[in-house]
Image 1 (cartoon, helix red, strand yellow):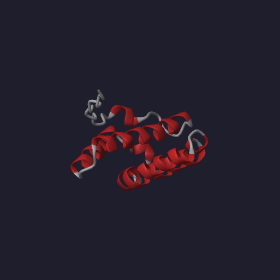
Image 2 (image 1 turned 90 degrees about the vertical axis):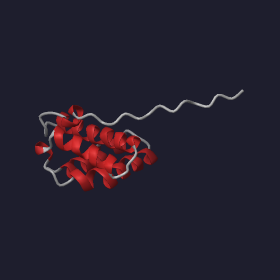
Image 3 (image 1 turned 120 degrees about the vertical axis):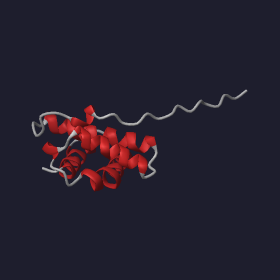
Length: 111
C-alpha cells in the first residue's frame, strides 16, 4: 500500500462522509497537487519522519507558503492516522516531523 493509495482510500471512505463536499475538494486538491506527487510512490509502511520533514523543506524551498505546507502536513497526518486505526501502519510518522509555523498577522481594528 503506497502513500497515494492510503490518502485516496482515506478521502473516499472516511473524509467523504465527515466533511462537506467543498471541504473534501480542498482536501483532495492538497493531497493530489502537493503530497501525492512527492510522497505517493513510497510504501506507507516505509515512510519515515525524515522523508516527511524533507518534503516540508522541499515545498518551502520551491516557494510554497508555510500555510500550504502546514495544510499538507495536516492532511497527510490525518490519512496516516487512519492507516494506524485500520491496522495498516504501526505508527503515524507525520506526527514526528515538524511542519513550519505560520506567522500570525495582526488583525485590523476599525475605529
